[in-house]
Length: 218
Image (tube, rainbow, N blue to C red; front, top):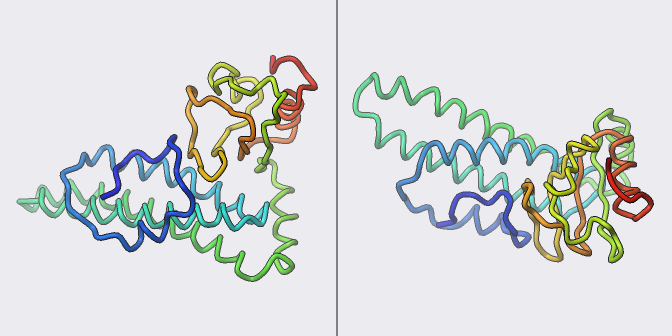
């Protein structure tokens, strides 16, 4: 069975089919850990879904499908735990709130899955959606780390990207892998493609730094 904690780690793409159809085994897991991962996935998956439309990118859409299937798997696991833990009516009432949170998180992931299905209409038919989404105040951007970038081989925390620019790095594409929700210790490498969320001004400052047009982000 797939382990918890996929966020912040390298993931081969695509994997959603394996997650969706793998045999579900029961294993004692922490409800807290499951809820934390469901929360993290629900925050990330909507950003990736809109990114797939903005960039008309089927590979990002595949990642959304993977996360959607992963969320289904986690929801199944948390229901198993709840059923095994509830021995009285009072126990069931206490656990019902947890199950409602899990159900809400899964609903978000299902909505993200519906968003990426729009790509199946064809790029020519959804160009207007990409243009509309790019007009939002908080936007999704994509940029690649060049070989001579001052950001190369430095960690996100060391660069203080979000503090200095207001830009959130929501995912990193590294060759054939993805790093979801990268943390402060994640080191940026040459050739990494960053998926970013933030405003235009913050993005321009970060872009100029990554491309070597400015010496720092301060």
